[in-house]
Image (cartoon, rainbow, N blue to C red):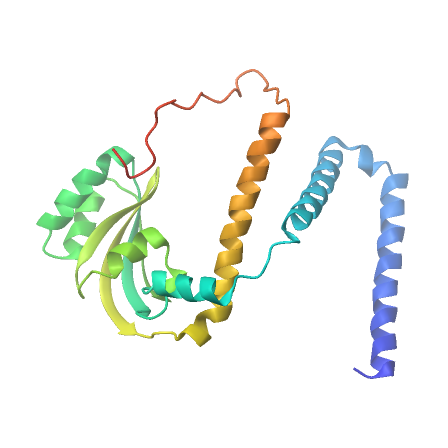
Amino acid sequence: MTTTETAQARGKVLDALIDQHLVSSAAKNEKLDKIPEVALAMQQAQRQVLVEAYVERLFKDLPKPSDNAIRDYYNQHPDLFARRKLYRVQELELQLAPERVAEMEAQLKKSHSLAEFTAWLGTQKIAVTSGEVVRPAEKIPAVMLSQLVNMKNGQAVVVPVDRDRTSVLQLQDSQAQPLSLDQASDTIVHQILGEKRRTLLEAEIHKLRADGKIEYASGFVPRPKPVNASPPGRP
């Protein structure tokens, strides 16, 4: 960027700041900041800025993963790297209560095609969104990828996604597109740091909740968690 271009860019930024200040002052003169919904939005924006500043300070000293850590991550996730594939999948997304998942699995096994299964869903008044997607392994949710890696072309499977949403996946095709360690290195650094940030943030929030005093309004008190609840996926 030339000196002239730099000066022009600074001028545009300055003009924008002046305009923003003038409009903001005019809004305050009209007492718009006293309108309840405007005041609430301003408070929320301020809290968001504070949260982002706090989180940024919390993460600022996280060290970059070592070469050994990067290599270990690469070896531990072959389906994302060494055995990475591009998947073409027909997906049916169902709005479905969890207790009906077993029924869906049984009906899918009895159906001769995905079209037949889709027609049956219509008779059950189950809302369905259908579409074909082409995605690499790293763009597929882990719960779905764990099924797709072992499927053959044409095979379909029911995958519960969350409490009220279930997907039916039919693998149309897959193509091998492996990544070498060097090619995957930057992605792995991002993944490792992301996991460390999530763990650190969860620990910090747990600490803040333990140290703080939270008062709930009537009707908003959360139910206590079962003391002996088993982790997901374990009996």
